[in-house]
Length: 85
Length: 177
Image 1 (spheres, helix red, strand yellow):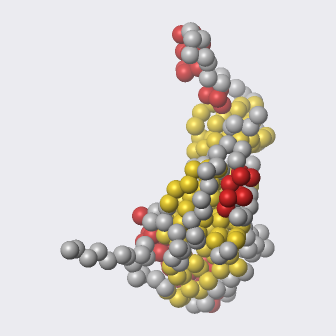
Image 2 (image 1 turned 90 degrees about the horizontal axis):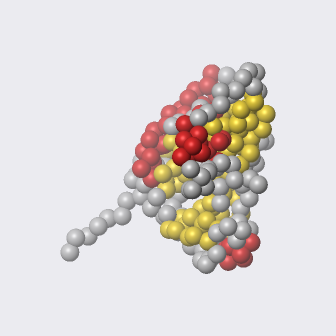
Image 3 (image 1 turned 45 degrees about the vertical axis):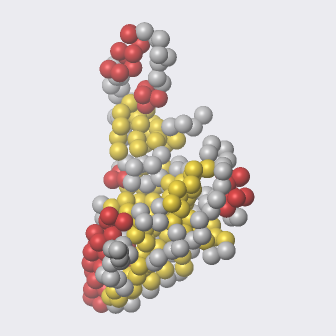
């Protein structure tokens, strides 16, 4: 598997670490309440299809990336910087 | 009074020549990390007297070389820059810097690094953060026949071991071919 880092270009999987569902980018407000925080911390979709995941390019430019991929076909659809607007 | 003797990262293990390739230690005047504050790359470039390097590129001025080294990060080899528009830290003793000179340096590196560093893909002025074996490294092409390799100083002897082995393997496959 190869990922195309927006800064470094196409790179081998060994340079990246998988760090979970990209829902981690959508942090609830501090006063959002226990249900919102429980969902943020513990509840995850398990889609057969398009998934958005966080990856860290630790052995490259150290950027955090949101990788959109298809869990059925293993196709990588898009790679973007996690803080891109 | 105790007299301390300064030792370089390679500590006398270099230079080594294997076939047409030479691995030598490079000792810049200083190594300075430059991290511009949000949106301040232009102001930092003005202070540095050269453009803050774009991802995967270097820039040069007055004998100083700025190597892009990650997101919002450049390492300046040479006279330390000054700027109030970014975080500047002295990392002179944190890195081991090697120059791999001679034809076929990329063929030796191909045994260790997953990035294609041949000159056709990676001409002078290009740089990459990647792996050298299992060591995080910065690899830059300075000239057609010279690659600069930087690793954390604690990994200097691991990198020398890996690089000299790879140079030997490249030489043997060259003479076999």
